[in-house]
Image: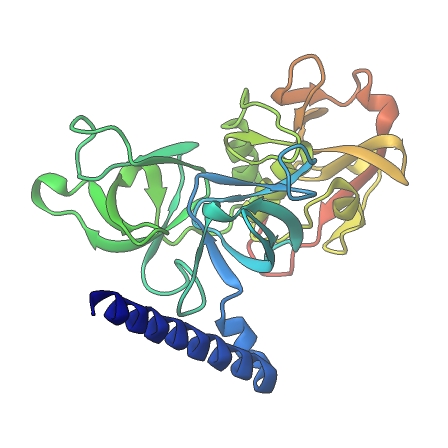
Length: 315
């Protein structure tokens, strides 16, 4: 009798699963917009999700998505998911376990109060104390978090946050900034110098490691502009206009290569003949270089100035 009851229960569960799958198929077939609900939006739950050209860590690292980022799921293949970062349309394969499906709403940290990591790295703790337990997670510059509540009393220097995995935790006020404003050119140059000495990483776009285009993309985004991901796309970006080398101003973007059609490196001009870049030259770190030094002076093939709308305050 017990065995028969178990079989009936399993059949009931199987029938319910089939009915739910059938409902999903009907929704997708008759309501194309329902595909977005089943759900293409995912949120990154690890400090940095590496994005590869193929579904293997032996493939080229093409970009990254940082903690709390909302991404679009393009394809799922077992342990791997192909995703797209909406702000620059970069596509790549990442581990499926690095993501969580967003069940409702537009995504993580898209509504309600949020805060953004201002430190190069920020530790998040299970309670408002840095000594009782090790951090729950250490996240990179620029990560955005959902705010649950302001700390009070002995916890007034803390914020309670809801993490992308839906757990609550605590972060110190000194590591974050609420309602960040676009930076001026001068402010973006000051920001760039905070990253000096951080490691170069091909495909990297976080404070754990940048490549050249990931670094300049981050600096331009801090000024309020979304620039493409790859160095070739950045040189062709319509959000910037060409300038002559003799007319360079701080904040202009520099592009290097064997020719204008073969660009392999970029950096940002910071004045006095210097520019800042994430490069492998001599020592693979974020570094300040001189435009008149070899090999840069002979490799410079394009200079670009970001088009700032009048009255935007971007300068």
